[in-house]
Amino acid sequence: MKNYDMKAYQKKIKHEMDDGRYQHTLGVMYTCAALAMRYEYDIQKAQLAGLLHDCAKCIPNGKKLKLCEKHNIQITEVEKRNPFLLHAKLGAFLAMHQYGITDKEVVSAILNHTTGKPNMSLLDKIVYVADYIEPRRNKAPNLTEVRKLAFLNLDDALYRILSDTLEYLDEGSGEIDEMTLKAYNYYKMQREHEGKGTEKEETL
Ligand code: DGI
Ligand code: FE
Ligand code: FE
Image: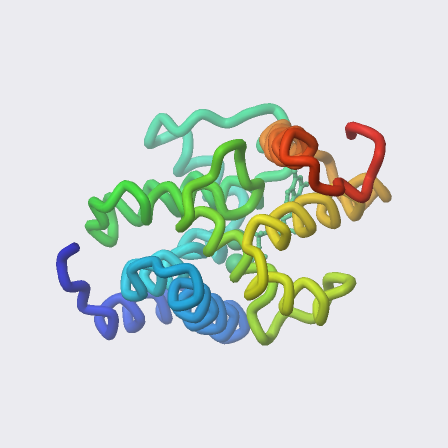
């Protein structure tokens, strides 16, 4: 893979977000690096994906919708009602066209970092899990356990996060995106085939 000028990307992204979001971004970047070490993925590529994953997060929601329309990025009904979800799709677009990222794995990891999807790549999983466990995160339940799990078995951590996220959304905290549900059901089925526990019995 080509050598990325990480410092230049850091400087650029710092200007696109508030300080809290930038600190989160750095946390995700370094957590991606740690997971890449553990699961033998390209460390620099994982860091780059972590650094850019929320590059569209601080764009106001109205502008997110406008930018998606302008660039022919498809908006689902759920996204129309919950425009913050679009920061993943728009982030992948900006990574390509504003940051000049051509690496498909990096772009895919940004695209799928919020909802997950069925059959995620190793980098998709690293970014998805790192986003949830980075050191500054403190809202999710069972973080101590999930953080440990992330370094023991990435797929177990991924499934746990999908499951906890759906539970949180199900409690009335947000409208469920079809992709989040697809991802959860895919990994639930996969685990059943592998004879692994799925904790929750019902298919959501
Ligand atoms: O951008 P971040 O806050 O760092 O993290 P993120 O992109 O993973 O977004 C986190 C939020 O996304 C979290 O509150 C759960 C929410 N989320 C994930 N899947 C869905 C969802 N929200 C809705 N409404 N629907 C989903 O399917
Ligand atoms: Fe995000
Ligand atoms: Fe994030």
